[in-house]
Image (cartoon, rainbow, N blue to C red; front, side, top):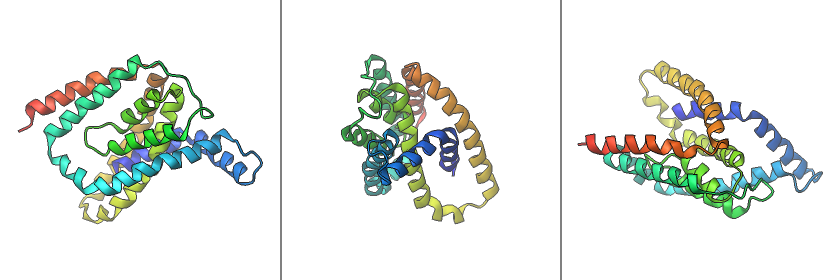
Length: 218
């Protein structure tokens, strides 16, 4: 339900991109413009969602067992920090949608699939992979969050039957609302950091929290 709140935040924040993607896809279907960048972006998002979906279905039960292992979560936070830190040395090719390939989409999709591991940041993994693939910084950020829409929606559908087990639904709804509001503010801040090429600054946070979890975990 918290992820549902952030999903709504992504939809509201990127509503113009989503509208252009829908319009571009419709033009492609009507064959008015076969090489529409926005239509191509939708195809790449769909393609990237395939490995994410497969990894989520295959490894779901196995990964859920790790949520009770704080030392492992701490270790994965250290890994996330390392992935983010390396981005400071990446000199991208500034590829736009036209230059983005199906291989780039698949790699980013695999990165998102790996992020089902607790402690691996989904946005950190996918944005960093976008940098490694040579994407323009803004496109790497946009693609990462647009790609989160089908992933979070799919996860929400899988988990929704468990809603009946929630005793205080109103508390959950408040949490969803807070996640939505904080999500909007975070997206505005994060997209600015991504465009400035300062994503690696989050590595310090990941390393600090990761070490703390490892040291304090029993």
